[in-house]
Length: 122
Image (tube, rainbow, N blue to C red):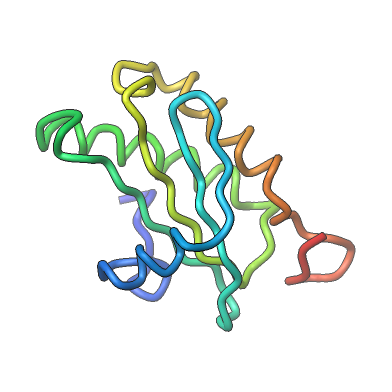
């Protein structure tokens, strides 16, 4: 599975999701990004798709698409952040290119980029 995260790179519990969602938020094209700093040497990612939007097959398809796009976009992202991506209705029937564009826009707009030194955000 090329886009699998290690257990330590995933946000899994409801409390962790709620904690990150109290942080800062950006929204673009049917996708929202919530992010906060963490005290770890790596980033952690969570993806949320409401059961009200689509069935399990559709939710998992969207999560796979977003996971693939995140892995492409996180190369330039600083470590030490918790990220939660929340899918909105507008992104339900989007193709991969549109999902990739939305993820790239969010990661570019968020102050998560690495500066000259490893692991620090600008």
